[in-house]
Image 1 (cartoon, rainbow, N blue to C red):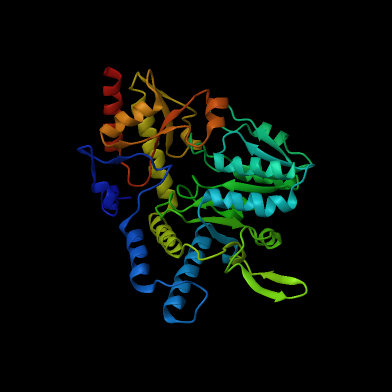
Image 2: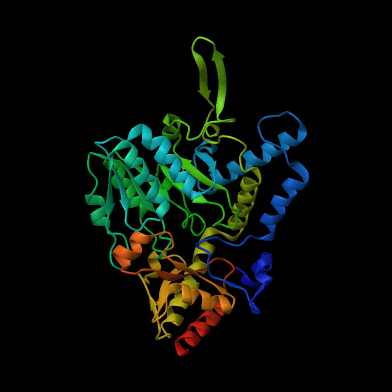
Length: 410
C-alpha cells in the first residue's frame, strides 16, 4: 500500500492538535473516515434522502436500493451464504444484546450454562450477566494466561451438556491477541452448543469468512472499520435467526397487525432480516459502511493485516528502547493484531495519555471496557493502549517513542 497517498483520503489527518501534527493511535476505539465514506453519506442526504421500504415514490425506491445493496455488499465481505443473514444494528454491543435477549430469553433456563472468556469486552459480559438474573442460567468464565492469550484447554474443559452457547472475542481489544475461534467453534458444535464471536476488532483488520469459521453469530461495528458511528452488523446463521423472536417491536419488523374486538391484536413478524430492524434504520450508516467495505476490499484485507503487523513489530522494538515503558501481554506477532497495551513507570495511564495529547498523540487509557482482564489476568488497575490502522506510519511511531523517552526524563 502507498500509505502517503492513502493518507490523503483522510481529511482529519491534516489537523494540528496542540500545535503538533495529529498522530492518531486510538484506532481500537474508533477509526477515522476516508473522504469516500464522507462523500457517500453526503450524497445520500443531498440526493436520495427518504425512508426505506414504505413508499413507492422515487426517493424511497432509491434509498431502499442503496440500503439493501449495502447489506448485500457486507454479506459478501464476510462471505455469508445469504444476505438475509445480515442484520443491521447500532454496533457490536447491540448485536450481542440482541442475541442475549432474543435468543437467550427463549432458550436459556436455570439448568443451562453460557461459556465466556475472561478477556471479553464488557459488551460480551454484561448482557449475559443481566439476562442470567432474569432466567437463572449460570455463566462460566474460561481462564486467560498471564500473557493475555486464551487458555484453550481450560475453555474446552468447561463445556458441558448444560452449555448452550459459547462467546469469545476474535481479537482482544486490550492485547490484540487473535484467538483461534475456529477451534473453539468446533469444540462448541461437538458439544451441541452455539458459538457467538465478537468481531469488533477482527472484521476491520483481517479477512473473516463466516462459512469457513462455521460460527453461528458474528457481531461487529462500522465505526471501527472506516464507517460511521451508529451502524453495525449481527450475522447469524439463517436457521438460527428464523427461530428467534424479535428483539424490539414497532414499525418495519411486522408483516401484519390486525385487531379483533373480541380477542385483541394478532401480530405476524416480517421476514429476515427485517423482523430484527424495528423502526427507521440507520440508512446513511449502512451506505457509509458499505463504502468503507469497498475501500478495504480495494486495499485487500491481507495487506491491511500485513501493514498492521509491520507497524506493531516496529513499535514493540522501538518501545524496548524506553527504560520507563512496560509492554503488557504477548508480543508474538504471529498471534497479534496492531494493538499494544503498555504502562509508563511512575505515572498513571491517564497522566500518560494527557501528556501524549499535549504532543498531538491520541492514545487510550483506562480499562478499555475490559476490567476483568486487567484486574484478574494482567494484574493492572489500568493501562495505556496504542492501536494502529491503515493510515499509520513508522514515522509516527518514531515521534511517539521520542515523547515517551521525554516523559521518562521529566
